[in-house]
Length: 247
Image 1 (cartoon, helix red, strand yellow):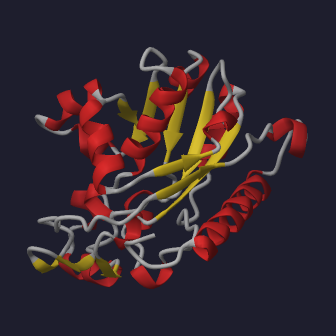
Image 2 (cartoon, rainbow, N blue to C red; image 1 turned 90 degrees about the horizontal axis):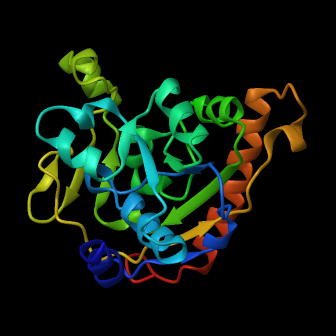
């Protein structure tokens, strides 16, 4: 935690508002936009704020792509509270009373072009709504700005991945083209060193899905409303931001 604090508060000058909107007890599913490419800082930023509010004794889990659990990285992911983003695992974690965060847009969202930096885009993924319903926990939307300013994101490169014929092997439809320091133009790897962009995060009020949408809610309708509220909050953060990187 000291190392995470040094990174997110020193280099990225992180500021998190509304952390009290996370329920004080019981499970909850935090749903967030994802920014920063391979070195996305969303999890460290929210983890530091969560630990400061609730203490390190209260666990915070992250639902993550199973590619992160290949080879030596698996040990680190397990120790850091990352778990595979499948319905069975999500249900077990949430029903245990733990708070969990998910990024429905995944790498598609994390590599969105700089021109679309302030757009909520989950790539049509709605499984997070079902996960919250099945575990009977509230959804807590989280929005963040600044992470997409750590370098230039030019394109997701969806067409390039298809031409390379590696979509199935890498379980990804994108081959992002980015520009930064020290490597200049890359296909996401090796990752450029992130600029010290100020990251501002806002935790919104929790959503009791059944209380708001009925006992048999329409998944698509819930997803639209969640993204609408998140987009409104992200627009407000963008309007208050004076300069890129500086904040």
